[in-house]
Length: 87
Image (cartoon, rainbow, N blue to C red; front, top):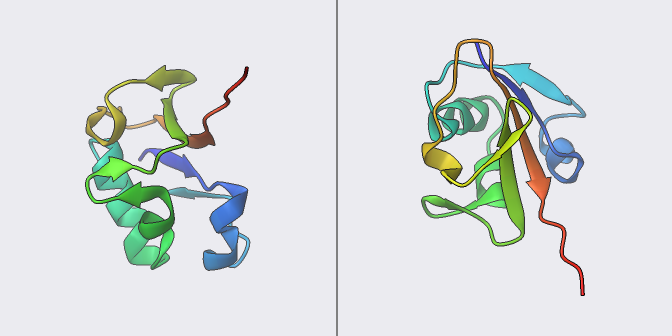
């Protein structure tokens, strides 16, 4: 099962749980599984069917441009990261 690392800004919804193994073949499916366990998580990370502005998703240590559509392997690691800007 893919492992989802819960961002610190939503851990108040998980009771402090930092990571969870869930079913899912895509980022969206895994996030939906997390939402079933911890309601409200998806709403903090997504707007509709896309990540909130300012977030990126990393699958197996690689930032993906596919967002919620990114494919997951059975042992994938999934991180939601705040986008870093500079100037």
